[in-house]
Image 1 (cartoon, rainbow, N blue to C red):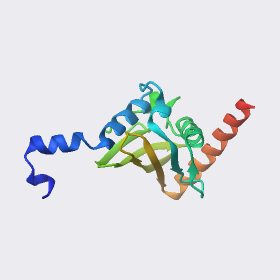
Image 2 (image 1 turned 60 degrees about the vertical axis):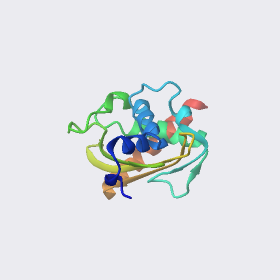
Image 3 (image 1 turned 60 degrees about the horizontal axis):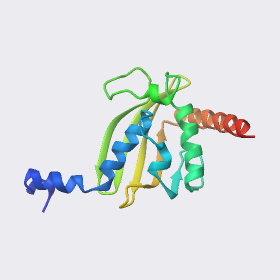
Image 4 (image 1 turned 180 degrees about the vertical axis):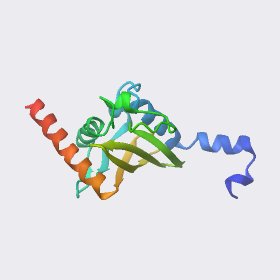
Amino acid sequence: MGSSDLPSDDYGRLMANEPIHDVIERWHQHMRGQLPGGLDELLHDDVVFLSPVVFTPQKGKAITMLYLNAASQALPGEAPNFAEAITDSSDSSGKFRYTKEIVDGHHAMLEFETTVDGKAVNGVDIITCDDDGKIVELKVMVRPLQAVNAVHQQMGQMLERMKSLSE
């Protein structure tokens, strides 16, 4: 039986029981700087992060948080920081914005757009969660090649800055 065959109230109840919906709502709160506990609350201890600019999967909450925090500084588009960079999907100002979402079961795909060094960046965050509402895998894909190169350069610079601040 497909979802269109279910009465609307049953379909709504089924959708509400899928853990990914709550995870994505909390992800958006985090992106706006409004989630108490931030990434620490969202990520599973053994999360796997697949970066568009690093060949090997990054395993664990600490390294994933490092990469995501660097990305939040490197990818805000024209805004000074990520919380100010988040816009609604109708804004075309060059700030980071999600343009589409596909959410089902334990999986979500969030398409985004931003700019890096004046280059248009288009990408997706592919998020998988467990039954407890923790993100167990986060894969980021970016296009076109010029955007990948710009993101790689920005991320490298941001990770170096973060490393030097922690020493």
